[in-house]
Structure formats: C-alpha cells, structure tokens
Length: 386
Image 1 (cartoon, rainbow, N blue to C red):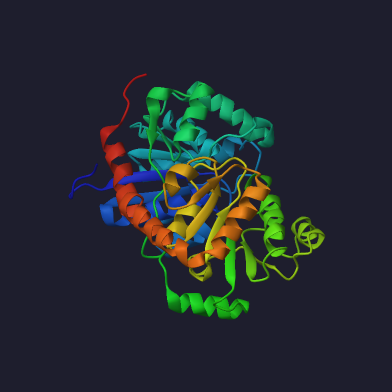
Image 2: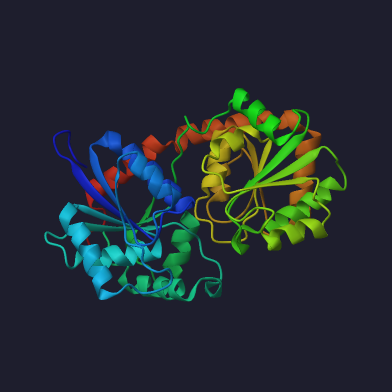
C-alpha cells in the first residue's frame, strides 16, 4: 500500500459504465480511495453511461473507448487503449468482469515497467448457454489465463468455487465482498414520507420493493406471481419495481402484470439514478434472482437502510443476510408469497431484524473497510506463484 508520501496509481478497466452492480461497486471504491492517497483512472471499454458521469462529477479521470458491444476491438482501438494506460503509468491494472480482466492481462505485456494485474469477477455462474457468445468464450479463455494475475478478486465465495471448478487458478483466489456507503443508505423518515406521498401510498400500506434491471436472471416473473398470491389474500400491499426497462412501456413486463390482473397493485418506476431514497420508502425488500448474482448490491443497500429482506439462495445472498432476513429457493413462487404475507401479518415484529440488518452492514461491509482491503491486497502483491 502507498505510504503517506507516495501516490498509488490504479487504472480500472471495465466493460461499461451503465448502472449495475459491478459499476456501482467500482464507483464506491474509487470514491473511497480518494481519501487514501490513490490516483484512480477508470477506462470504459464501452460507453460512458450514468456511472461514468457520476465519476466525472467527482473529477475522477475517466476514459471512454466506445468499443462495440459483443465485438473484438480493432488493432487501432487496442493501440488507443494502450496509449491511455502508458500515459498514466499505473502501478496497478485492475480488471472488472471478464472483458476488463482480459483487457488488462493483454495490456500488461505491452507496458514497461509492467504493472501488477488484478482481476475482479462479479457474478456467480448459471448455465453458460445463458451467456452471450463472446462472454461464454471469455469465461473459458480466462480459465487458461488465470495464473497470470497477482490475484483474482471474487465478491462471492460461491462464485470462487464455481470458477475453480472451471479451471480458474485456486491459489489466486481472494474474497473481498462488496462495500456499502452507510451514510448514503440509511433510514430517513422525512424522505420516506416524501417518496410515499409522491407515490400516493399511505403509511399503513405495506410497500414491497424489487430493484433490479429487467433480465431473465433477475426473475421478475417469480416476483409478480408471488405478488398475485399476496394480493389475492391482502388488499393492503403494494409492489414497487425499479430498474432498467422495468416500466410500463416494456411490453414483456406489462403483459405479465395484466395477465395477473395486478395493474392496481404494482408501480413501475424504471431506472432511477438515486435509489437510496426509494429504499427509505419501502417496508420490505425482495430479491428474486435465479442465477448470476455474485454479491447483490441491492440486498446490502436495503439492509443498510434498515429493511428486512427476502432473497433467493443465489451467490452470496445467504451469507450477506446472516440471521437478519429470509432465504428461499430460486423460483419458489409459493414460498415467496408466503413470506411476504407473514411479514404483512407481523410487520412490527420484523423491525428489530431490519435494525440488526443495518448493524450487520455497518460492522462487516462498510465501504471504508472494503476499500482498505483492496489497498492491502495491492500492497502485498498477493500470490507470487501457482
């Protein structure tokens, strides 16, 4: 780690800077490292996106390559990529996700002096056929290259085990969970009242939230089917969907809602740039993901806001919740509906667990602690041989 007189230069390379779990974690890490004498550069292989704009607002050095999604960049694109890195002379090249990991691995061979290379794998694995063709190939190629980086950072122990079974170097494994800004994500009664008033929801109504982009792995279908079971029994529960493409103009999602006759029980807000206020308005948070989660940011953010959470047993969700929430099997519509109804019947009894959830995040997963874990790893160089 850099001492008080030495600036550590780190270049982060990521697929893109749209709103997502890995992108949000990168933002939080770079922001936290500002106070740790770290000079950060963020290179997006794809677009700038909302997270890129947030980084720029912090005066972080951001470079955008605009490579076409799903395509291998041209030789000229790669040369431009190398010139950006050479100009910054980073001591650390930190990849994010498979595309970023491969990019920093290749770049390091053309940089002198050669920086240390670190990978960051941010998801657990489902069936590989569910991945895009290029991503599927990169996953397998990465296994062959996995002895090159100084360490492979996983935010999920489940993910580390799954990748090890695919041939990823086990000696390079390093578990560092996601970190959370416990000052941004915290209970706030004033914000709660404001948001609920704007949504037309009384304090007596139970508001159940689901915050995730629209994608099969997030399994909105199970969430809405469970909502139907709840609404058939209770008329005082409203369901809120937030995330990219989670909006009425998305025919796939609205047809599900109409088929279940949930038009009056579901509110869709689409993608929101500031979700911390949304959590404050909720009574209960649900994550219904079927696969692909590493360490779910949305669950940690909800917990930091003092919410009781129900989550499927995917990735690191069970470990994250501990005894403060409920874990169910992926795709368990009846089980999810039953747990939501149990909460609705005994709402006040769950508040204590919500407070315990926030305490757990503050103690184990605060971003300042996680940021120092990264710097400690960079300082050690971690594994020197496999």
